[in-house]
Length: 79
Image (cartoon, rainbow, N blue to C red; front, side, top):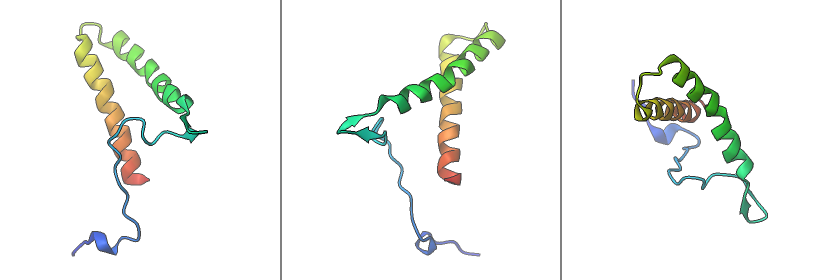
């Protein structure tokens, strides 16, 4: 069993530049997408603070960043 990327009809790229893939309207970045993404994780941060009050701030941020990264990887995989 062999797998080749050349056999795929379209190869997706990864954008590692923050906000470069945001929607651009009239040559300006539409900040609504960015704000909604941040707002989506605020309840998660509140829940972590309630469930794990003895964790340090950096540990909580690391968990939130890890979950965010997991979501991005899953979006890439399942496109």
